[in-house]
Amino acid sequence: MATDAGDSADANPALAADASPAAHLIVVSNRLPVTLEQKGSEWSFKLSSGGLVSALSGLKREMSFTWVGWPGKDFGADDRDKIDRLLSENACSAVYLDDETAELYYNGFANSILWPLFHYHPGEMMFEETAWDAYQRANAAFAEALARVVKDGDLVWIQDYHLMLLPRMLRALLDASGRRGVKIGWFLHTPFPSSELYRILPVRRQILEGVLAADLLGFHTYDYARHFLSSCTRILGLATTGDAVETAAGGGGRVVRVGTFPIGIDPDKFRDALQTDEVRTRLGELERRFAGERVIVGVDRLDYIKGVPQKLLAFEQFLSTHSGGERVVLVQVAVPSRGDVEEYRQLITSVNELVGRINGRFGTIEYTPIHFLHRSVAFSELVALYAVADVCLVTSTRDGMNLVSYEYVASQAQRHGVLVLSEFAGAAQSLDGAVIVNSWNIEEVAGAVALALAMAPAQREASFRTLHRYVAKHTAAYWGTSFIAELTRVRHAADAAALL
Ligand code: GDG
Image (cartoon, rainbow, N blue to C red; front, side):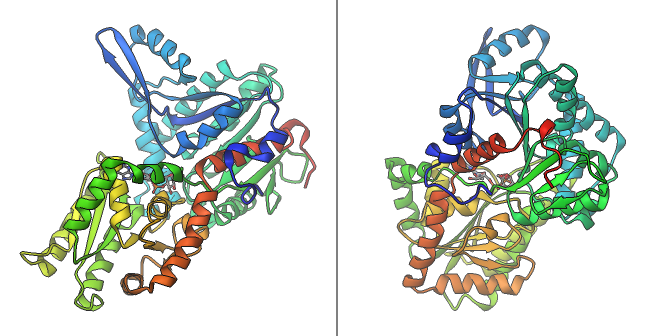
């Protein structure tokens, strides 16, 4: 498995040895990572930053590259030519969806059906046929757009739960037009749930059959891969091994490889930011502001999977029974997310109530226990907050990986702070050195926070070194290169049968 070899992703030996120099990589994600702005009749293009963008930066130097995705809205026919030209100059290509399809596919199906189910919230799942129809239409639009750009021998890497029908739809179009040697990979950024949960999904067969047309399927952790494999057996009756599925019951099908590829971050971005005057000045200001107080930081999209209410309840418990007279503050950044979905609006209300209650109960004129920022903060502010905090508290009730925990480690070279991390985040399976907690156990989390704040410097340093070694090696670029090296290595679908 491509998870533990080599030191630098930019010089991944596996990729150098196996990838054909001529291989062209096409990355497909729901959203193109770009901002398009119009000034007068001219359009400008900006590449957004993000995990996937940095993961691909190393690969871009090794192979030619195109990014295919939805540009964010349905531009009018007059603008499309200009936008297509601009995108193509920047190695991108747009999949246009009408606004109604985009809304129903993205919010209606991906975020209201697959997202809650994959994060063990079946009660939030609202299955509607119109949303399912839109999901099929949107995936078909992606397949048609891709079929126009994919050439013989290309590697196609599809991202995430938005595009689970795409491997099958694309494969059908490529086969029909006689395209040869195209390898398709798919990676899931969320958990894949236990088959007991997954089988609730009314369209469980179609979704599995959709991804099984790929050559390589990737997950963050071995558990997610294992859940996927057992869903294939239980729902489709397919034979599986620890890292493969045969696509026809009773034999004679193709073999699809299933692997574990834990994502990472770009740690240099945090190290470099900490050297800048802007972050150093801000860090100094925060240190003065919090003098005499211990700081816990939390950074989450305000999503029900992130366990923000559980975090607030645990902090309340800590204040009432564990703080030992020390002044401890929780700085919680809660980035607004999907505010147009009812479950998310209810979450905001309950989080606001909890923050008010806890600050009212424990606050004084001089002391505010929770600094609650219900907005996103600038990157420089984020890094300064990570750097000033004695503890980072991650209480996700489910989370594919959780990059915030990696980013905290990357920002703690000076302080050697302690990471308290939910066992339900994928990161808990990689980050040795964190204090692992059951985020549903309020008393356990409160006790872990007390333990983290009281940890002796030598133990903090030893834990930090272990964490830092992992984060520095398993970067986003390493993840991207490892997946593509494996995709290059897997035997092509047409000649892969009977490997089991
Ligand atoms: C999905 C999966 C998986 C947050 N607040 C601010 C800000 N952020 C940045 C963080 C971090 C990112 O957003 C959040 O990443 P996570 O991994 O923690 O969570 P999701 O957004 O849910 O991502 C997750 C991931 O995909 C990758 O596979 O790990 O499990 O759910 O990078 O820094 N950035 C700035 N200001 C903020 O206020 N600048």
